[in-house]
Image (tube, rainbow, N blue to C red; front, side, top):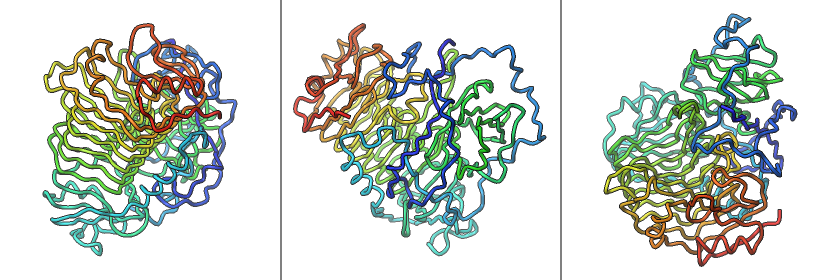
Length: 574
């Protein structure tokens, strides 16, 4: 590989963004974490403030560039490096048996969400109002069967059928004989750390009880800061700890003040926050200061947090907060019907290695994914932020029918919404009655995942298309009443084969949307440099740029090709 790994350790102390409602729990004062040296920044990393960053070396989608994969001759095989301490820490991935709700380190909110835009968008007030509404949403589940209660203060010897006799561990869900009509409720104000996927059951509702903030489920099995868990290594500024879980995809410092940069070889650790997870279960971190001095280090492994099995139906997920995983937040396997996700919060999702694409390690992670096929399902009134890949997505080889994404706040995801059909030859492949209504989509491409991908510049508020030149079913695609607020590359990345576009465009029902865009610099993975405020609308054609804009007049002209009757189109002079 000749590509230079162009990512940097993002530590942005945005004091102006200490918003009390951010995250899933009440805010508290955070001590200042060790600050990475500015000299560690990789000068080749594409940055929104860089007037002319280097373009990607190739255009392989949905994977992250591992950089130079040749090992310098002056480096030994990493497996032969000795541990001078004789021990690399004691992080075994087990679930800590403590009452997380009473642990101040665990119940703190995200104090910022790596906000490089820092209020530069056009929909700050609307986003703040929707976020507050989502965080304050009441519990509305109607449970007709048995209700099972879970609390960190509970006991797994309880039957769990009363708030006064709650179960403790979510592992007990595997032992319960859940039936249609039953409910699973987690105590508000609590944190549940998990080490395995929570598998959902048809006909069962999952939600919250009690008072306080939404209950949180974290894929990080423990706080990896403090208690001398990190040991100094033989190489200067290298630290090592045991990490025997699946591939570590994301590392978040001090509840969002910084995020680590995953590397693929030990010798690539050169800047603060660089980390490498080897096959033997050791996790290496480059840090000029002792990482044990951080308040928190949360690590997400390759684990889907909530899985909806193939064929499962009639499931509602309400008022839960899911954070810190290297894979998917919520994933459905196919042939699913009547799945509803409402009033939930998901953040810091993705980044683990999914597999190899030739010599490239392909990383992944969606917050909410409907895979293969789904019907009569929705995501409504949810806040999703800082996802490596897509916040909300439908994708796969079969039919998606009667799908609704409504009134969601989607921020700092690589794709705020992504949908595509594969190149299968099935006659039932496609979409029918898919609506995207009333959502606020902000700052696609400006999050941690977008800057840590191989395909930098492929981001979009909505990315869509078919896997080949046919799509047997395409009916009633509606995009109305949304706010599209500042995209790094594409506002709309709907790319079709030119012949197919002539067929599908009549099924586009687009109106009443609001578009804000501002000046930015960057490079587009498909077309090369396409100018400030780049917007992609329409058809992918060889050597033809999409519609782009760098001014109010140009923005209006570009938007008109997608939305002929927008509510507002505004170029922001930031």
